[in-house]
Length: 234
Image 1 (tube, rainbow, N blue to C red):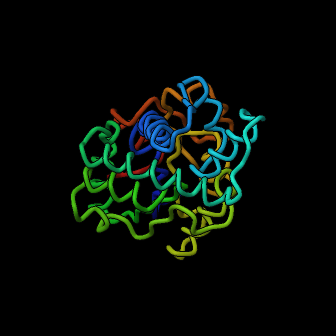
Image 2: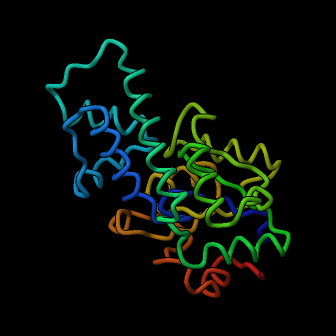
């Protein structure tokens, strides 16, 4: 198989973002006079749901059975997520969330070699832009031929919708691509789209089931191992 494209997840894959998301959620709750606090153990459970607004709703429905929902519940959740995103992107702009080891080099090597790069994530366009502008520079978009993120598809991971969208944008078959993910939800999403998938674990996902992954790595600090496993000559 000749790899024509690499499709990247973002949160937990390109950078260890999950704890920053958790802190930003807590800041948004406090700012809105809510006595909610997501510690690491709780957030680990909440991560089974992808998408920030979906995660808030899952928390309310599964962990706050006595909570009285406001009349405009969807608006309430949307506002919380907007405030949270502002806190999170501020952390990104301050350089508090660097790219994971090997990630920048992989992107630069692949782009130089003519491998098509794309993004497939449930996080917002603002989060993607803020992270990659710090990690890759203001011209970060030059590296990516498709940027699939946020709410552009109806169903988030583990549904394959975002990967299907990226494949359509790239006009490539699943067999032309590999995906890089960090979680069981992400792996299931990419596999459901028919894409061979590699996993780099992080503290929140290291105990998850990665059956079906082509290979699982702690990180990409030794890119030669990843290149050999993926059949990449970069």
